[in-house]
Amino acid sequence: MKVCMDPATKRYLWDSLCKIRDSGKCIVLTSHSMEECEALCTRIAIMVNGNFKCLGSTQHLKNKFAEGYTLTIKLKKLPESAGLVHADTELIEKYIKDHFPRAHLREKHQELLYYYITDTSMAWSTMFGILERAKRSDLNIEDYSLGQSSLEQVFLTFTKHQNPEGDDVKKKN
Image (cartoon, rainbow, N blue to C red; front, side, top):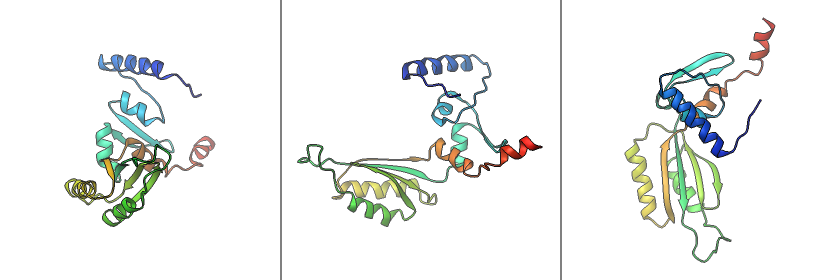
C-alpha cells in the first residue's frame, strides 16, 4: 500500500524518524524512494530477486557502484523572448558531444539540459576545465552543475537485473 502525504507531514515524519535513529535506536525501513533512503538511512541495502546485492552508506554505494556523472546545463534566456522563445541548444549539444563522447542527453526542457556521462576515466579537473571554457565562450551558458551519479541511478543499475519470474520461482519452492 502506498501512503501519500503532504510535504509538511512528510518532513515531520522524517524529522521524528531521524531523532529516533540519532538516539541510538535501529530502524529498518523498506522503500523504493532513494530520496527517502538518503534522508533517513545511515546504511542502505539493495535487494534484487530477494538477494542482497550491496550494503553500505550512501556515499560508499555511489563510490563503488555509480557508473558515471550527471551534468546539468542552464542556458541564458533570450532577452527578447519574454519567456515565449527558448534558447537554441544545438551549439551546446554539439560541444558536449565533441568533448564528452559518452554523454547521453537524458532530458531537455526549455533552457535546461540534463546529461548522463558514462565515461568515468576523465578527471574531474579536466571535465570542469571543459565546462569552464564552454561557459566563457559564446555558447550562452548561464550555469552548470557536474556531480556524481545519484543513489537513484545506483538503484536502477541493480534493478535492471530484476527477474520478474524471480518472485514466482521462490513462491513455488
